[in-house]
Length: 278
Image 1 (tube, rainbow, N blue to C red):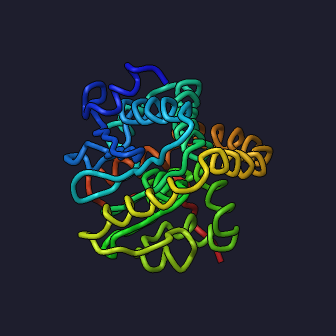
Image 2 (image 1 turned 45 degrees about the horizontal axis):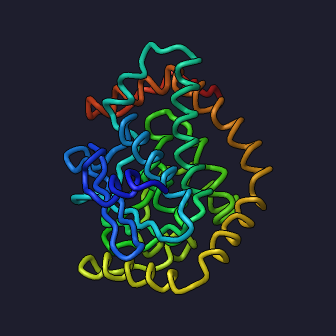
């Protein structure tokens, strides 16, 4: 990695507007920095997070810690971003879905170990970021959930990763009910490694990071590459289908109604509901 790239990572906010990036002794801490929007994902944040991970991928050693600023870890896709999707073509929806898929896949395939320090709620895409990391630490107050079905959306892009982690039966529970679960239940499901008090969250994440840094960097990279290779054929196939499903869902009447009802704080009136005759 060139001097300029290292400098950009070492100098907080020198090149990123939605992230705060610092490095100490090989531990790169990436903080989602949109606290006024509960660190929700928009184009800029996703692009900047991908750029940081792309720069880290060329390193021979190091650990990335991912956390959020403020009361939330990440609230999923930004509602303003979702509103901007209205009226777009299928091709534009597909392009947007591909960006989200690349974000998750880049995190999953990152050669360096990754630790999510979940400081608050991790919802929808935010839950994806939190649980795709190699290790997930969470405060007791954190809630997790794939709430897409509540707004007529399809949690397609996260479903493949979720099934790999906890199996189809538990994945169906979370995806179909769209319910929120506490950090302890997420731990019992295998989505969270440790539930840590707020004051100890970052210290514990850094302690784990330094433990990882004591291992052979070459071995860690090789192990992560092997694990990614095991899942690659399945993920390649499933993510391609998920991108299409995600793109199509964004143009449905149910999605438009779900988004409108959420923004207007009212119960949705699903267009796809049909009366059942006895």
